[in-house]
Length: 270
Image (cartoon, rainbow, N blue to C red; front, side, top):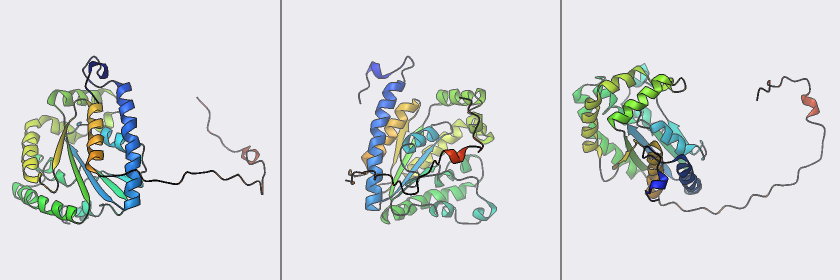
């Protein structure tokens, strides 16, 4: 996939038609990957992290829209309950880890401790330092247990983040994406940068390395993320028997559409 001028629009970003064509190719491969995961009983975790408005949601949607939600399961945990606050920090994440034949995609993960919780003062420095010390050991255990762990950091620039926040303010279809926490994160850009730097340095390991994907161009970022995931897993296309539809049985045949007369159908406005 070359980077020639025909692929870019006037803003230097990926053209929609080119993006959709390349995305379809990758999504076909994701379906092959899905078949292999189910066939081999593989367990995979994909962690997506990044600043607010970095493009995590759109990337996850592109990754999952053509595969089964029973295989590719997205986990986006809310604020911990009072009970969860008394548990080990990583406990509520581990209980959602994959069984055989599953991919768990974390839209934000246990790395909240090193990011938003640290920057916003929800934990003290001692707690955060302890987390950063333990995290590589925990991830080594996860990988040693046979789970493939892929960690992706989406890196959005300051100007692009501002554009995306402004778009959310003005667009009623996106306003729900802009929480008070997002607004506060906008004001603390450099605090988040320092937290990011510390986190990446402490938790980038041989067992569970980080990969950074630039996401100012959302379309290019989505393609690069999916391509990286596919290249990180040695999957093969699994042969499946061709499906042949059986003849419909006429036993007990009746006018099944006629029985719907008098029922309440939706008003057809389109």
